[in-house]
Every structure is written in structure tokens, then in C-alpha cells.
Amino acid sequence: LKLDTVALFNDDKLIDYASKDESRGINLALNKIEAMIIKYNCKDGYLVTQINNVKSSIDGYKISIKTTGDIIENTCKIDLTDPDKISEIEKDTEKQIKKLVRKGVNYTQNIELDVLGIGNLLYKENPKKFKKIDDWNKYYSKLDIDISVQARITTKGSSKQSLKEALDGN
Image (cartoon, rainbow, N blue to C red; front, side, top):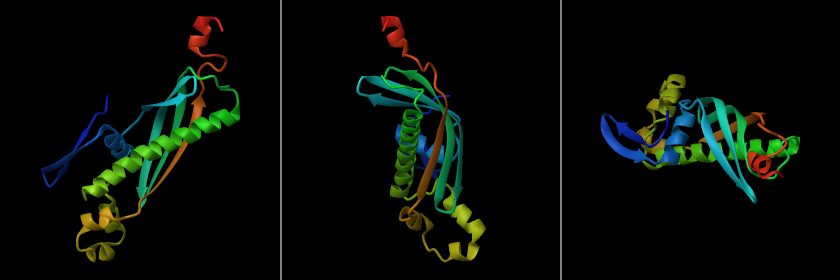
């Protein structure tokens, strides 16, 4: 399944279409993505990871995402047996996922539409507090929503050399 853009509705009325990145961010937050490709550029090439087993949860005003990933392509001249390099790749993966989710959250806040269901969670947790809020969507648009991402690289592919290096005889 390929994800493109998402149409957003409020009470059966079309509000807008989210961009590809905003759609990915929204779907990551809603735990609707099982796997996704992330590409990184380096000085001498690129590295591609595939994130798998994406688990997202929303608790209050916090979105938490945990995932594992595999390096599926590497043309960069980096040592994939070096734990520090793997840690850098994990941090870059977390940063890119967080950036996508932030784009999705910011987009839904800008159009004042709580597609993440934070209002429903608040209502279930504290109905009296929720009922005191006059305009939930306006209130939602001003919330400070925290995003945490934890990514772990589990498979490194070929750790000796890139396919390009192998074909070139380097």
C-alpha cells in the first residue's frame, strides 16, 4: 500500500487535503503505518532504512512512537559495524520521523481539526474539564503536543561494502 495525500473531513464536510509528508505524519501518530522507507543523503551517496513494527500511542498531549528499522541500501562510505555509526543512523531516523509527525500535527492544528482524537481522550479522562472548553478545535490549535520517537536499527544489510563498491571492484 502506498500512502499519498489524505483528505480531511469534519462532520462529512471536506476541509482540506494534507500533503504527502503531513499525511505520513498524521498516519504515524495514529498508528496506521506498518512500514516506511526513509532515505538519508551523505557526502558520497545515500543510505536507505525501512522502518518496521511502528507502534504509536497518544496519551494526553504526548505522541509516543517506537519502531525498529533495517538498513536496506547503503552507498555511503560508513562502517556499519561501528556502534556509534548505527547510533547516528538511529538518531537520524528518530529525527526524520519526529519531523514528519510534527508536520502532521502542525497541519491539523493550523486547520483547527483534531483528527488525532486528543479531545476524545481528554473527554474520557476528564469530562468536566472537557466541557469547560468552549471551542475544542480552537483550543486544540494552541496545544503544545510533545512527540517522542525511539528507533532501533536491527539489521544492517551488508556491513562490509556497498553493492556499488562490490560491482566496481573496490
